Image (cartoon, rainbow, N blue to C red):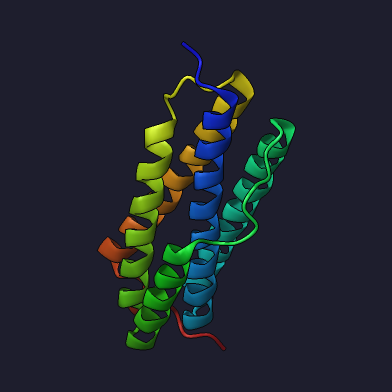
Length: 154
């Protein structure tokens, strides 16, 4: 049984808020990490979250809803936690981003198999693949401790 249009709008709007939360956290992480080996992938991931907001917002509008325009309260908390981690160093920053991406992966996973209309489900599944890729990179970077192996820049 298909879920109601109102439920689709509600679920997509919740994902939009989570993606806004992620954008704020990525802003803090990118500011904290001066090493391009760390900041460039994070800048790309931030762009994915911006695309998620744009695509999900378009779907919400198409369904007659009004998408969120800013993060919720939890977004400010995540942003602050990431900023504090940035003051500690690259490992703490990446650990904060790992926590953020784990939350996003869970949120997208919870919705990736819901009975959404095909166009909505397609966007959610594609975004979920992005989230899995982000988390895999952060986890691998933490395992490899890549901030310790950065070549000196001329």
